Image 1: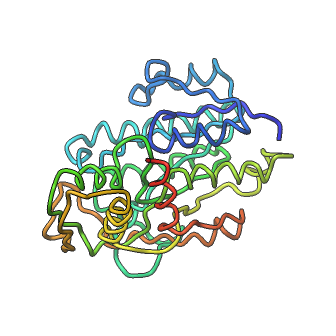
Image 2 (image 1 turned 180 degrees about the vertical axis):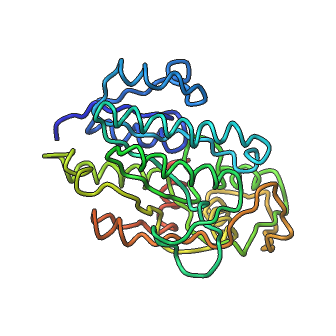
Length: 297
């Protein structure tokens, strides 16, 4: 595959870090610091893109503080909508394809079947509203694009459920974990591997990828579980390595764990479109978690 000059935003974040590791095999990466490119400052986007002249833009930057977004809606809107729209407009203007990441939080969480890409949306919180609004901003710009909706992401960088459980398991004897929100914990490494695989499949003409397959795709690990499930699995894996301070893990309904932002009860995503289009086979969430825990030792 010809090496592609790729602008990666959010390269030090949870997903961006894993993308930087995987894409570096195929691409010459441009990973700007916040001082060089700040999505909270829209005016910095066009000059940076025009100066660096990438062949591909991968936007892994986002405002992801779900609860904090309820009190910072303007900042969440700026980063997840305004900046995304500007990035898409600039990309279209210079003829550069765009890869972007969205979320299961665009849905209202009703029902018990996995959400498909064309299902009606209805976000329950500010974060979900802003991520949803970022999607048409890309489409309307007319830029060739791939948008991947993912869910329950965790990784070595940043704040996430898995790292929180590892910390609390060494600090508390009792923990209560929500057991009525269903989805699939998804490793950032799995997402990055999948994106790299898709690009590698089109190594002879990677621009054809965007010409033929621009659109929206769901991309999460396989299986389904409540938050209680991975918490239990994490502590079972930790206990095999040595004594665990935690003595009791309790499953509770969402009502017993109120948060500023309402969470969807059903975060299942149907990934058949990405499987059929790109032959990407989701890794079961359990195996992905075991792999992650091994890398944390």
